[in-house]
Amino acid sequence: MVRRLLRLTNRSVFVQFELGLKNNFLRDAERLVKNKEEVELKKLGIILGAVAALGFLAVPSVQAAEVLNVYSSRHYDVDKQVYADFEKETGIKVNVVEGKGDELLERLTREKDKPEADLFLTVGAESIAPLMERGLSEGFSSAAVEKNIPARYRGEGWMGITARARVIAYPLDRVDPSKITSYDDLTKPEWKGKVLVRSSSSSYNVALLSSFIQLNGADAAKAWAQGVVGNLARTPKGNDRDQAKAVVAGEGDLAVMNSYYFIRMMRSSDPAEADAAKKIGLIFPKPVHLNLSIAALVRGAGNKDNAVKFLEFLSGEHVQALYAEANGEFPLNPSVPLPEVQKSWGAFEPQELNYETLGKAKPEAAAIFDQVGWK
Image (cartoon, rainbow, N blue to C red; front, side, top):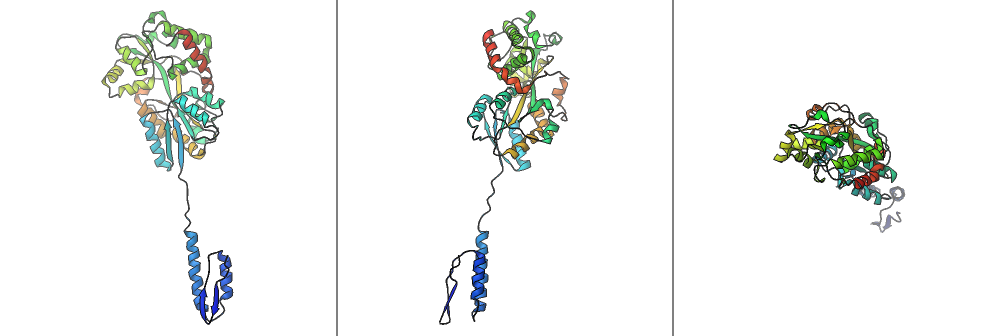
C-alpha cells in the first residue's frame, strides 16, 4: 500500500514511495498535488504510472505446450511418419513409448490411478477385453470416427486402425490352391507332414485359435489344433516370413502367415525374402481371420482432446491410405481404395467376430495349445 508519497520541508521536495495498488497511488497523488510543485508532481505521476504498467507487463504469460503421450506396440517406420504428419498438421507434440503389447498393458494397469499415457496402440484386438475388464479405457465421442470406421471395427473407448488377414501361403509350382478353401483343410490327411506354422506363443496364432473358440466352441477349436499338430512338417519355429521361405525351400507345402508380411517380403532388401514372394501364392480361407491394430483412449488421459484428435487423424483417408500402401495392411475406412497388391487378391469373407470379447478366450487358447502339444 502507498503509505507516504511526499513531504515538503523548506520548499524542498523529498520523495519516498513504494509500489502498491495502482488505484490507491492515484488517489494519494491527486490529494497531494496542491502547491507550486504541481507540474513536477504530475510528471512524477506519469513516470510512476508507466513504471507500474511495466511491472504488470513484465509478468510472462506461460502456456504449456500441446502434447500427446502414446504407448504403442506398433514398431513400423510408417508410424513415425504418421506421428510427424500429425505434429505438422496440429502443432501437437507426440511422445511415444514403444514395447510389446502385453508389457504395455501391464504398465497401463500399474499406472491406472495416475495414467501417463493418453492412447494405447497395439497390433492385436485380443487386447480390447483386458483393457475394458480392468477399466483402463474410456469412451469418447467423435463424428469423424463414426463416419470413417465401420461400427463392427470400433467400440466403447477403442477403434480399429487397420486389419491384416491370417492367410495360407502355398508354392505356385506344386500346389493346386482350389484344394484349400478353409482352415479346416489344414487338418486333412493329405497334408500330413506338409504344414508350417509359428509357435503357440505367437500372438497371431493365439488370436486365430481364440477366434475359433468364439465362433465354434472350445471342443472344435481343440480338434482343429490337434489336427494341425498332426500334420506339421517340423517343430514350429521362426516368424511368418520364415514359414513362407520354408515353403519355397520345400520343407512344407502350406504355411500360415499374415497377409501384410507377403507385401513386406515383396519389397524386402533381403534377396531370399524377395525371391520367396515371387514363388508363393496366398489363399484366403472362407471365412478368413482378420485381426486388427487398435487404438484405445486411456481412462483419465491428461490430454484427452488431443487424443481424440489423433484418433480422428488415424481414421482419415490420408493415414489409412498410408498404412495400406507403406505397410501392406488393409484400411478400415471404406472410402480408401485398396493398393494394387491387396486389390489383386480379390474379395474375401471375414469372420463375424466380437472383437471386444476375443481376448477372453486367450487363456483357453493357451491351454489348448499345451494340451495338443503345439510347441
